[in-house]
Length: 509
Ligand code: DCT
Ligand code: MG
Image (tube, rainbow, N blue to C red; front, side, top):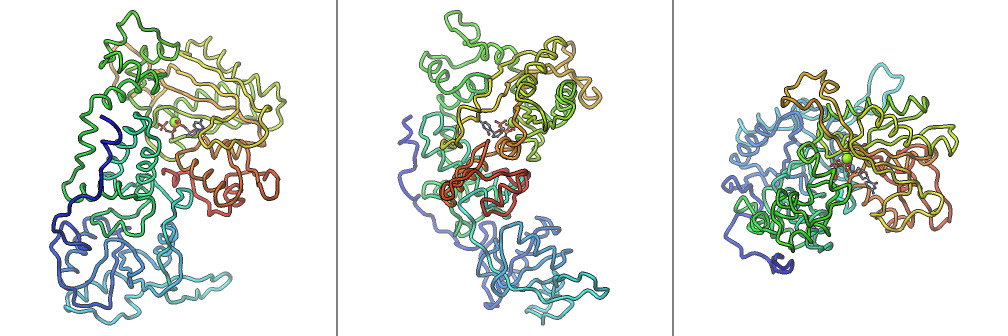
């Protein structure tokens, strides 16, 4: 199917539907127009929150699904005023207009009374002010707050692994991948950006009203959201999942070393299964693809955190055998708190080493593993660092550090003390491991880059468009001042860019 045909051609025809109310519940009359409530899920839990929201609505209260400008009161349970403020800050919501923080006891009493009861000190949640040196902590009334706009840049949003919008983001990721397979980068990026922004939301979208004010949601994206809200699924996503080309590309690219070009070729030749490809004698495979087929089962089954930790021990042992002062940091998805990954990424750097020592480390490590018969595949890429001084303008470009792409043999007994049950016979699992060696003065930039995810690309986009700076895995260049800005830590890079610091586990955009 042509990518153009895959795109929805315009807004979907609408069915009569309640706008603004939860799709799951019938509309209720609002009796108390002056109050707009938002019930905080934190420490309360989804079930209780949903129950209270429904009950309050039935009693005539206006309860919003999300925190918006119109909200006048936040209702929370087991949270102090400071905790709510902290939560608001994490959601990127800053203080500015009038907003009250109330304990759930006020809502319960009000519902019992059938009308809002007076808000007294016992209901109002207070925020501790700075009380340094004082034995008598002073309190202030809830400060004014207002909802801050959600940024179009992922680097200005906090995106943890706690995704409340899986239903939508999974759909967008399928569509983005399909467009990528069809080399339609624009549409692919549209859906990836949409997925990224929804992952940062602290609430689940349950009506189209919830999408108001959210950036990166183009019309074609909103059509899919609307369809999922109404029907529980998207017909376009369903069609893609059943599409032969999508299924084949998905299968072919699951082999290490197989990209879009090879997949296209195999698809055109009429291949649909890996077994047919493997057994075809006319096909030529690269060394990478041969390894990909050889260890296919192991490599498609994701790397667990326990396996990643076991690999980390191996890497540290090997690196420290040659450079005892080296820093070895697990980067990639595991540094962002993920429990599984497709590989394990490590950044290695060492203060006070000569260039020659640095250059020799990865070859020595590889050699050691080869002697120990742990090396199943290795591709060492030499550093091209000196040749390019300026940060790259290409946001997707590879960096110039020396690195190696490996497949290591990880013995089961090294993982979880070998406790978990395994298939009989084979005593190890093949694991993809990437090692990057970077000069010590560039470690902060390399760490930021290799921690990922797409977040990092948005950080570069932000630097270019909002700060007239160029950021890459090596450096940050200020085009206005024409200088490189040094940084010893990731925090310093954020500060140079004028951004609030975002922790690695908040970078799962
Ligand atoms: N990276 C980079 N430059 C590249 C390739 C990758 O800076 N040319 C960064 C981005 C993410 C990080 O390195 C690790 O890459 P992956 O392992 O592909 O991603 P991941 O987030 O670790 O995901 P997974 O869990 O699938 O390994
Ligand atoms: Mg990784």
